[in-house]
Length: 254
Ligand code: ADP
Ligand code: MG
Image (cartoon, rainbow, N blue to C red):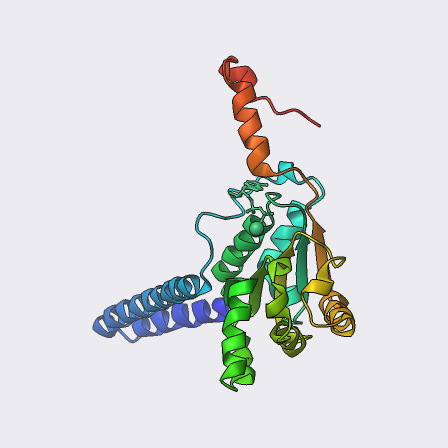
């Protein structure tokens, strides 16, 4: 489409020249430039709007994510996911598991940011907060509408799923959310525990299994089984103190 636009623009320019309509030619060129500027401005505003509504934790981008710390995660695969098309169009999911401090939330937020840059709409939520909101909606008999409202987000990031508490589990709003988005809209879930402990998150075992079944049916699973990045960097800082700077920056290959 872009090339066609360009060809047409060049042709019009040529025609106006041939017709010796230099005044019109000048105005037309100015208009074209203005329209282009308006397009750029609009997409910038859309990005700002989508970024604000996404409520991402600040500063967590793919550029600041150290992939060397998670050798089991392919940077190329993450970059491909950041494009969005292949999975968000099909409502596929991404599940990130691993112990605290391993970079799950950072990776989730960074992917969210990259997706917004690519024009997608994203919402980042602590799972317990969102469950609480949905519980209120259920109480007010507007749960269905509340879940439907989340449809505008191509990706809903549920951070720390396993932190949903027993009393929150009893209302099963999380199950309703998962069912409603199944094969339509994507979820990115982070959790310390892969499935084993999920019995606490849903009211009964049948529902737990049904939820897991839907989540994994079309899913990419990342297991960030690494030591806490926070702890590791703290230890490295202590170790490198007093060493010559050149040595301190050498990374161990293990
Ligand atoms: P988790 O959600 O798995 O508990 P976080 O994503 O919150 O872990 O990571 C803890 C802290 O360490 C955050 O400040 C995060 O930015 C940082 N961090 C974790 N992993 C990495 C990484 N691979 N590269 C850069 N920073 C990281
Ligand atoms: Mg986290």
